[in-house]
Amino acid sequence: MCLAVPGKVLDIEERDGTRMANVDFGGVVKEVCLEYLPDLEVGEYAIVHVGFALQRLDEESAKQTLELFETLGMLQEEFGDPWEMAAEAGGELPPAREEARK
Image (cartoon, rainbow, N blue to C red):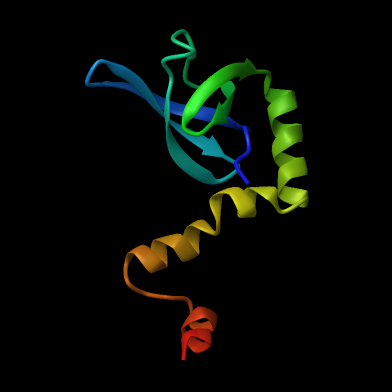
């Protein structure tokens, strides 16, 4: 499933003429393009879909939505377990996954 998820802008930089940001989605940080919201600032929240910030969102609404997505397991479904993904990228699997692989 591909959700539009609220996230908080942590930092902004211009890369090759494009405004990009690191955005926190309840503990998972991803790079996001800000071209559709050129006046979005650090600390603000936005709805993000497929790597693009599409709409500004107030903090209360963003936090409520993130809590709901977390409760329903939708953040895990959308982003996966960041610790597990990092271990896999490093060539290591968590013990439970390694055991299941055998």
